[in-house]
Structures are given as structure tokens and as C-alpha cells.
Length: 300
Image 1 (cartoon, rainbow, N blue to C red):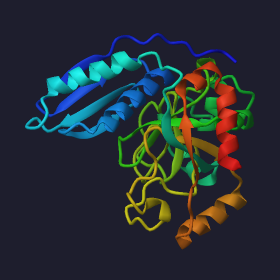
Image 2 (image 1 turned 90 degrees about the vertical axis):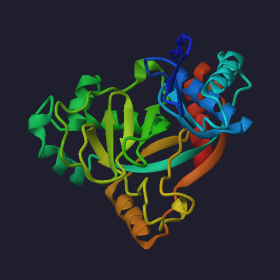
Image 3 (image 1 turned 135 degrees about the horizontal axis):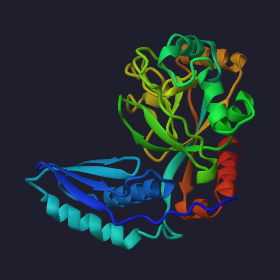
């Protein structure tokens, strides 16, 4: 196990007109930067400060919307600085109440494969599939070891955005084991709904069909976005993932994919989830042990 060690700079605070405060934790993405953004925004949420309209954590930053008639943005910045100074060290007692979620994925599926083959003129390696290309540039001996690595450790949702419901998620492994791939040279004009894609060090599930530039590795049988709110997991909102969720993109075969699609079509599918208390400091000290515990809780 290689420790993940990053020294974070002092946060940078900026104002967006009269209503927004933007805070950059770091210019580079890291688990530490995201954990810090999560910890500060969670602490702010618990304070229930009058005038805070929306709290939006991101990969290595966050943005707060205020009602300037009730809360001056400078007063909010002073509050945020105080929270930051009190919790910069990711102390052992800091914990995030979150969920660990099983997200089945059919890797190397026929639908995303058909799509990616239509766009080889926009790809770095026109003679290989996206999985074959990713395996080669990340040093794996073929597609199957890559899929094993993608499915082996969970990911944390660092932000929701770009399109409604798209969960940007970062695999919870030390930096030397991070899988990274570039986006397409030019974006595709088509991507199937529920495609599992990868760009940079981020994994996503595309919530709707549309354009996209991430490498296509597979497809999920269940949606992350349900405008009709037909499935039980969407009873309280049209988007399932939340920032801070811990997702395991579990590899499944075609038989299980079809069974789960039938449950989705029947309106009976529900994600397997477990509530957990996640301690970033414990994870940073021993990520493999914490990941084992998380998956044990998920499948017990």
C-alpha cells in the first residue's frame, strides 16, 4: 500500500456577483481536496445559516449561493474561513455520513461497442476499442485485468453535474493505482443512455443519450436519472447519486444485465445501498483496509 500524501494550499475565495461565493481548495484533483470540500460543506450545512440558499460541492472546490438581503457574502466567507481553519488536517474524528451503493455494470457490452466503433476517426487509437486502448496505456495485460481493476475498488462521487444526474466519481485508490485516460480527440455526437465512461481519472454513468467525449467501457442496467420518478429509488428526486456517495461499479454478465433490465422495466428495481460513516483520515492511512470494510458492509 502506498500512502496518499498531498499538501493542500490555502483555499482561494472569490465572489460571483452578489449571490455566489466560489472556493477553490486546490487546482489539482485529489481525494484529500475532495474530502476537504465535503467536510467544509457538510459543516456549513449543519450550521443552517440563514441566507444560505444552495451548497454545491465539486471535485476540488465548492460554491455557495446566498440571498444577499439576508446574508452578506463577506460574512459567509468569514464563516467558511473559520470552518477551514478548524478542520484543515482531516482529523481522526471527522466523519461523513454517506451511502455505499452497488452499481452493476456490463463491461465490454455490445451497445457501447457499436457506438464507439462508429467514431474511430475521433479517437487516439482508431485500431483499438476504448477498453483495449485504456488497458494498453495504463500498463494492463489486456482488457480483463483492466475490468478487474475498475470493478475492484469503490469510487467516491465528487460532484453531480454537466448534465442532470451525471455522477463524477473518483476511484478510492492510491495515486499510483489511479486509472487515467484522455477524452476523445473530438467528442462523439452519440452516447447511449446509461453508458459507463471514463475521462481523466473520473468515471461516470451517462444519465441520458447524447454527445460525449469519455472513453466507453460498458453500460449500467439501471438509470441514475429518472425524470418520471417511476422507480422507488427516485421517489424523492429525479437524480439518484449524491455527492459523497461511495459507488462500487460491479462487473456483471449478460444474464444478470437482462434480469436487472427486466426489473427496471417492471418498476421494481432498487439499488443495494447501506448507510455508512466514512472517516477520510482512516481511509488515507489504509485505503485497502477501508475499501474491504466498505464492500463487506455493502454485501453482508
